[in-house]
Length: 115
Length: 114
Image (cartoon, rainbow over all chains, first blue to last red; front, side, top):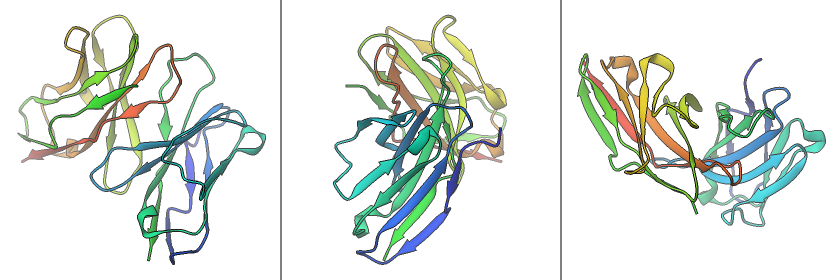
């Protein structure tokens, strides 16, 4: 069990460009979450997958954001036409299929800077 | 809707002294409660959880937390603080019968002075 892996760890992009982040959850975890964290704030929920199905999306998630989890394994989060306000740490987490009360395990995060 | 309040942005404590980081929550139904720790430029690490049963929960690195249903609180405690405990601490809640998505507080910065 190698934990939740996120790639890249850091991304600097120019405003208006598209970026894509990848998350590899703990193997056999069927639940996957994306959160965004800005300085001085706690993680804010973005979206949630159970297997390959995207079951919930935050109202914070604008149309420029899209997430996928093909085949219920890794997930990608894409931001189109990035804005400076998108600068944040993007966190991925996963939790187990066994039982309803298991905790989420987080990756190291991808820090996005939009210049 | 579920929410978490961490009323202190920062807690300062001397090494060797007991520490408490406060958390109160709001949720429909029974809560599942969690504490996480975050070191600079890192993801969140799970510390402990309350699901049911004994109100005093023990977790990693000597931390424990006490669930108080009447006060809707889940304060994090440690009998003797270490300088290495200095980090950001986040409390999270989700409803037992609701979605699987935890809601996090804003975090509390714990500073342990030598």
